[in-house]
Length: 246
Image (cartoon, rainbow, N blue to C red; front, side):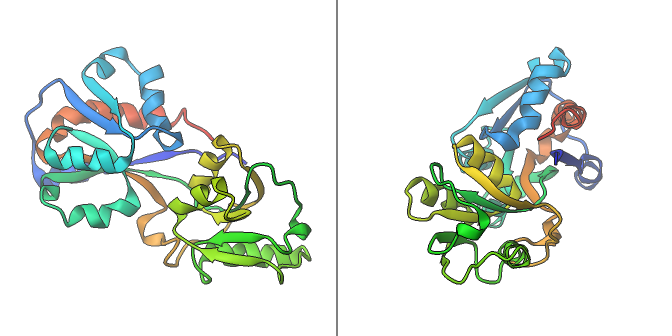
């Protein structure tokens, strides 16, 4: 099944709240690369060249680096992972930023096997699985489906950790598999791991998959005073996201 990455435009609502800024042509935009930045790549590859020429698009090692560059004022706009937003909001300089858009992705309960491991669903006995928490909706969905398919999970050992640590644990072979959310599954495939199971129909609504943030993977933050200057780039993202399909 294919799932489209979408950028939900909040620009017009934000602009009404903060008023118009200076409309300089050149803006600087930061992102951390990878699968979630697909809309940015699509803009660079397919959208009118004059828009991109007015945007200095820079790739950083992580979205944390993007966040600190936004706080320091060296970036006009940037994409930051949604789970980093609460900590970022507590830092000096955040009040100068505003949310201009959100990149969303379905949660999707996914079981990833570490590369080199070839087992079926009924052969998980004795393996170590990483999960976010015992009560996570992702794990509960996977467990229910596995039992419905008559897989025996009684011998499975679980290690609980944050999602960002799971791919590292797979690489280190400290776990054999991980129950992760959909946005991480694309990265897992890029790293050479394999997907044994996926259920895109799961319903969010708990601590590990909160529905309140609309499955946000990345948040586009913009300097308030640069909203007008960023508008052409944001419009280009809206057009490009229609071309981005996983």
